[in-house]
Length: 224
Image (cartoon, rainbow, N blue to C red):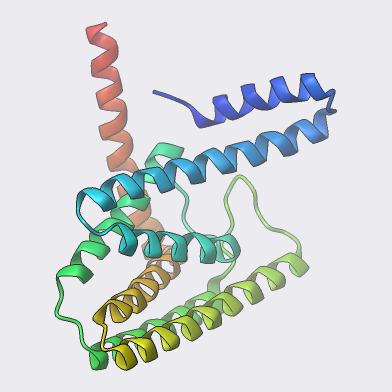
């Protein structure tokens, strides 16, 4: 099974040797490459499964909504990159399929969006940022900055949803309402991962995918 960390490290090492970087610059390059490959893997999987189920745009909207908010709010973490990407597919494609099959109207969209953002603003105000055990945030200044960033992101999402609803009504196009709910659902899922229950659910999903992925890897190894 491939290892993004190993790929990033090897590539960063080659670049650093070629450009004569010191250890500090090497670590920056390695971190950047790892983040890039991780994001690329996640997007590719969402595109593949989103397209397969006919909900590509909806899944991408949910995915980017989660990713952007997560940059400042943090949240539960998976144990491997592939497990994290797999959880991302489940958390974006399944809601997209459900939304695509629902009978959506303006009233439901407004009510659901308002309720979701009330809950999300509260959770982000109380809990964000939720850091990683490997990289705890100790700076009070950084904590305040990230919390503020989370709340600003939520406000921007609310503005986008409001504009989408307006366009949906003005143009009589239900697609804009679906896009609004995609943003709302993505916001709710990411906010949920800040909570203790969210961490439990995330860990269960992580364990499931680790079992499936490594079980498959072991079987292939035994065959060889």
